[in-house]
Length: 195
Image (tube, rainbow, N blue to C red; front, side, top):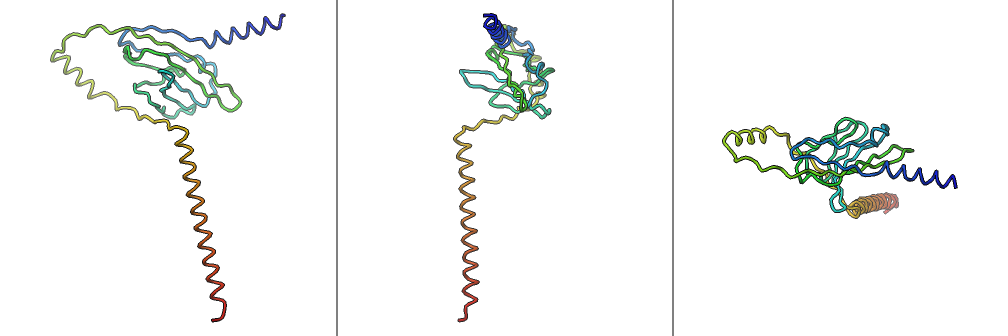
């Protein structure tokens, strides 16, 4: 009975550590989404942050060796902060949703996930556009950094089709080489016979 109680306590502790954090912010605030599993596991292969929409994950991945992040269908500009936090500048209601931090462990380690739910309150109505506001908006647009390159995930069937096409090309080239070698050796044998 004591072992069963210990097992239940361990399962509850594990469930509590995997629970989702709820964050509420105002419009146009900067938000840092924390990934506590990254802080606990400093030896990892990669850290990925995903925004989950209708079961689809859109994300940004950073390798453990400090390479530049890679974007996967992530339409918003974001950066990694200290302790692998996801930094969202000037959030809008469209940024609301469920986010997931996924740690891919090195060989022998354990992959870990942490979930965060972000709610951004509606923005207050803006003042009419004056000439000064227009100039400030135009200057901010001109000085904003370029869009991030997005990498699209290909379906598994496309990957398999690519591998099959390469394999087929190798087989065809191998058969052509064998045929050429066979023709050459046949000609050499033919040329040896007295005519």
